[in-house]
Image 1 (cartoon, rainbow, N blue to C red):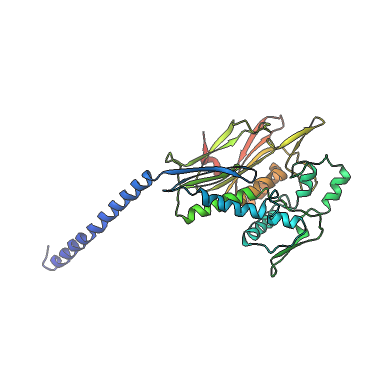
Image 2: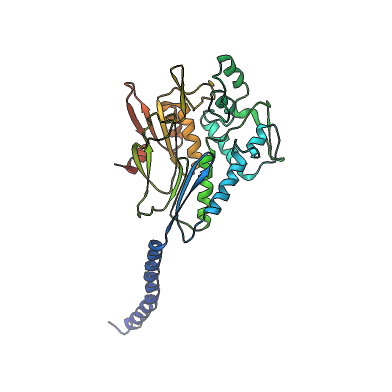
Length: 350
């Protein structure tokens, strides 16, 4: 080493000595965070909302059930058809309430999915749902003439939103709104946002099968979510799984005709109504599971795909790479068959 090199060598060593405390701090901090994450308990809350059961599992020091239920009640107050004071009930009665940001967020999303699926997802389908016996009141099976008359006031273009007044008007007073195919997913999103505001990184929110996951499960693994085999099960007692997906940092919703159905005159009537024909769908898809970034979107598209059928659903998926789907359908021989987005392959847990 030359005399000229000596000062620079001394500076380099001094710099290293100054860096050592910082490196030590990083090591200790990483160790502390890891230990804290392992010691922080997972809370598990369950309850009843939207006519179904909710389950929330999250890693946090204290229980947040009161806050979770308060958040869910906000959603119920906007979209429940069973709550006479909800915004949707008031609209269906012909009132004209000023609409909240929450209502408008879901209404706009519903309009977007309506457009992207050529009307397969339609929140104005309520009169048809009721007529076929799947709504909040049961009526006799409709005749073809009755179906045609109901179709005259079904369709989102018959709704008009006044941005300035924040109000909706209807072309026909008989037009009714039904958010049941999107509200549970949106409720899961709202609870997930609440948990995120508390800085919670590991959680799973599930409302009636509509799910949001983040981080890792209590077993320190990705969240594993089962897809139920679509066997006729109106009493919802079957737990047989078709597959299990390793899901984390995604939202997931499933729609199917294997639980909400009935037989009349030897014929099966399933709850998914095609807004274009006015009749329950008869496609080969038995179950549609959709995964994407938010659960409201997954919920809406899962319903739309049940209406569209396998081939038309694939066309929509080609336009929307952010959507991933897992379809269980009946093949030409009447056997169960499966199709899923190629991007889901590495998430299927054998």
